[in-house]
Structures are given as C-alpha cells and as structure tokens.
Length: 211
Ligand code: Z5A
Image (cartoon, rainbow, N blue to C red; front, side):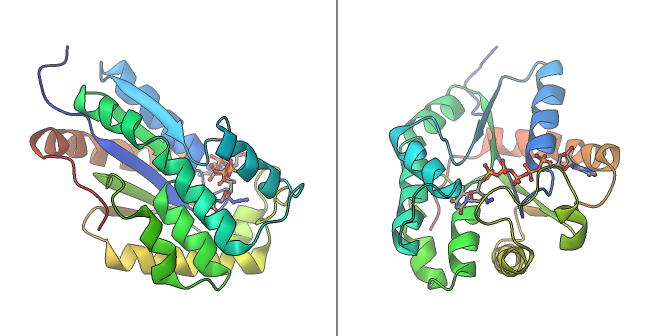
C-alpha cells in the first residue's frame, strides 16, 4: 500500500539490440512479484499522434530533417511527463525503455550539435537510475531482426555508442554500466542487486529535473 513515499524512475539505455526491452521487462516482473507497484513504459511511444509521425520516420515511410525528428522525439517525452510524475508521486515505480539519452545520442551521432540536442529535454524528470547496456556492436548485429529500421547500420551504431559513452562520462553517479554481452541471467542478477537500493533511495528524495 502507498504510504506517501514516491516511486523510483528507472531507465534502460543503449544501442540497438543491447537488451533494453528484455531487461526492463524482466526487472518489472521481478519487482512486481515482490509487491512493488510498477508501470512499464517505453520511448518512442508510438501510440500518440507524435509517436505515429516518429514511427513513419523510423520505418522509412517519411523523411524528416534531423532537427525536426529530434524535436518530435523530445515532444513525445514531454507529452508523457505529467503522467510519469503523477505515477511516481502516487508511489508507482516507472521503468522506462529508452529516454532522453537516446534522443541526444542518436541525433548527435548524425552530427547535430550535442548541446543543442540536450536542450529540448531540460526540465523533464531526471531518472533515479540509468542502466546502460553496452556491448561489442558486431555481437549486437547478430541478434534478432537487426537491420529492419532506419538506424540499424553498424557504422551509425558505432557513433551512437560513442555518444552514449559521452553521456555516461558526464552522469556516472546514477548511470550503471553493464556488459550487454553477458548472459541474460548474469545481467538480471546484476540489475536486481542495484534496483533495491535505487528504490529505497528514491523514496527518500524529491523528484529532480534534467538540467
Ligand atoms: N530513438 C531516437 O533516435 N531518439 C529518441 O529520442 C528515442 C529513440 C527515444 C527505435 O527505438 C529507434 O528510435 C531506435 C532509437 C531511436 N533506433 N533504432 N533503430 P526502439 O526502442 O523502438 O528500438 P527497438 O527496435 O524496439 O529496440 P532495440 O533497441 O533494437 O532492442 P533492445 O530493446 O535493446 O533489445 P531486446 O529487444 O531486448 O533484445 C534484442 C534481441 O537480443 C532479442 O532477440 C533478445 O532475445 C536478444 N538478447 C537480449 N539480451 C541478450 C543477451 N544478454 N544475450 C543474448 N541475446 C540477448
């Protein structure tokens, strides 16, 4: 039962096929089985009007200027901010598959100015923890259905990985670097070991925003 403590905001980030969806869903089910109230979300949220435009772009049915798609990805997060905040304050822990850092990493990897890329997300909720799944890209490209969407090209993913490393270097206090080439079980154990502490700490802290 909710007794006034807020939920934790936990984000999974990394290159394509690094295992974000698998691990975020697994953590959700582990915490649910322990009685934690959980909401699982992901970005892009392709169900909204803006999300529909993003989906058309990602599936190569619509071309957009790099800055335009970047702002749409950010707007897609802004349209969910109130509902995320409401859930957290009601004591629900929100587990999110990709967030702002994907926004900055993918657009900066195209050559868009890094600071410009970060600016539209300032003021969004800052996660309590980010699990950054990082692995050798040659290994990730051999995982299921790789290459179907716009960004799934090895050279581009390498640049995206460099941008994620840059973000990690700036935010290592709440980012947890994980070797995505480890087995599912090893990763699940590592994440679960960190998650309990994150929930306890978040319950004592006010929400903060991305600066
Ligand atoms: N994008 C952007 O540009 N700007 C933004 O602001 C945002 C996103 C939010 C779509 O995202 C695109 O949008 C994405 C970034 C860009 N780029 N592309 N393309 P998406 O989240 O919808 O992408 P996705 O295609 O759904 O997810 P993903 O990143 O490709 O996959 P994943 O979630 O990291 O991996 P997974 O689905 O958990 O696992 C992939 C496969 O690997 C699957 O067969 C698993 O069983 C297997 N797997 C997972 N972990 C392991 C381990 N440890 N060992 C072996 N095999 C494993």
